[in-house]
Length: 462
Ligand code: FAD
Ligand code: SF4
Ligand code: SF4
Image (cartoon, rainbow, N blue to C red; front, side, top):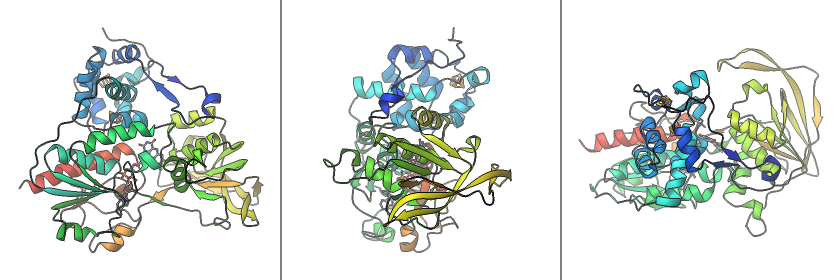
């Protein structure tokens, strides 16, 4: 008899007033007993609607059944057939619009906590079971993947499992992409990311770090000089957008990308033990309303800022960030200064001292379906701030486009692909993840990497 409770089993979290003083993970995960109880809420639907909501098709009812019986190793093995990064996905997937959004239990209560269960299985496996991954036998075919983020990692893992000799080229000194340099430690612990990445490299994937494809080596050279038969490009969308307003070049203005990279990858919070400081003021304004803005604001708070504001031009209903992230930010005393748009950053002696904003009101819905924000004339006012973090989106870096003849991109700078195969306008060059969609999600990047791996295998097996 399933557990018919309408609510998910609660997951413990660090107290908000304690956690704003540390970088430890906010959520604490389930115990075995809690996980088994939550797994008991799954109805084992024959039509598996939840699986249809998962871009990498994790066999959800099957792994949950094993959890309900306490067979965690078996549950892990079932997940790993489709997803080698379950501890990461269980934490950062927007489950509410993916797997859990399709769960039938969500019709009359809360859906089954698929993400929390997936995270539990992965954490439990890593702590208590972890077995060495067997390196598959080589099929003597070589594939290069560009970038070490979730799209490339998934493509590399799926191909390596089939015996391909995969080499991953990463521009930075660490694999993981945004998982390492963007998403903060308090949402996604970096030790855990490294452990999951190892489950990919243990499949025999060769890693070349500090190599910028398009600069150190071109895509053409990967084919002609290195003998690769296919290339997958998962280079992400790492180029920050700015507002192009006066004062944006003042000291004290960061892109969210730079701000978070300094803190996550370079551990600026541990300066002078780490090489990079980050200047944090008394009053920080973060411009934008997505997950990146929430991460930057919550990071600024932990670095010691007295007052942190999210400045967003629409209202709370339109905030693109996950509901859970907004809730956590509110608990952490982040102030939401909504329906405001910056028009000028004001400075003295080259440093930010304030930000002029205009009030906005919402008009008719635009092409995105959200109500269009319109400025209210004459409503400008100056906000007292000394640090501004701009988190209004990222686009793909143009480097690969500029150094690869015939690689078409659209007007947003995203690589054009055939959506069935992820092949680009160049034969045997595939692409996926943020480089193709623009800034999106980890699981969509992974789904694209998976699709490309399947197409590469079909092509090279002919
Ligand atoms: P990336 O993760 O960007 O990885 C690309 C990699 O390629 C990088 O390591 C980069 O250094 C490397 N690279 C780039 N160019 C080259 C080159 N020329 N040569 C070699 N290497 C190169 N998504 C969620 O699902 N949930 C969240 O909660 C979430 N929060 C986020 C928070 C922040 C702060 C940010 C920035 C993003 C967040 N996202 C979230 C989005 C998500 O992280 C991305 O959609 C996802 O990482 C995209 O994966 P990717 O593999 O396409 O690219
Ligand atoms: Fe849900 Fe993400 Fe897991 Fe798929 S990978 S089942 S979308 S949490
Ligand atoms: Fe279980 Fe929900 Fe999937 Fe049904 S839809 S199998 S209840 S997780």
